Amino acid sequence: MLIRDQDDDCFGLWMFHDGKLVEVALPRTERFHEPAPPTDEFVPSPGILLRTDTHQRLPRQTPPELRDPRPAW
Image 1: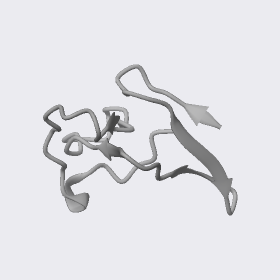
Image 2: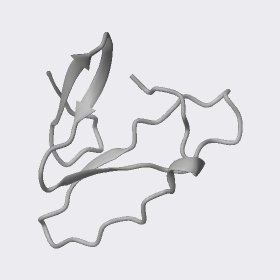
Image 3: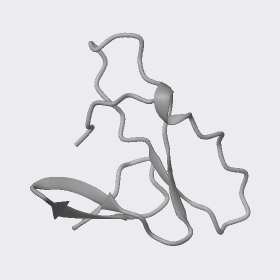
Image 4: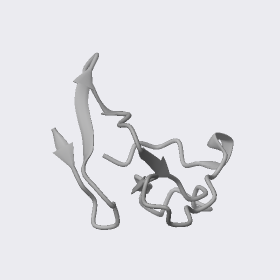
């Protein structure tokens, strides 16, 4: 299925794999994540899917260990 959040540049391709909804990596796109919120009272963020071929300055990617591990979908 195609899913697009309000802040995404384009639609992301998602599929069920082993009973879980996972994003399929698409060429010339990357999902950027913010650091995890300080507590679990905040809802998890799916990040922002951006095109990498537009020659716009891309945000700095948060290292995986600082991202929120909770699924956003």
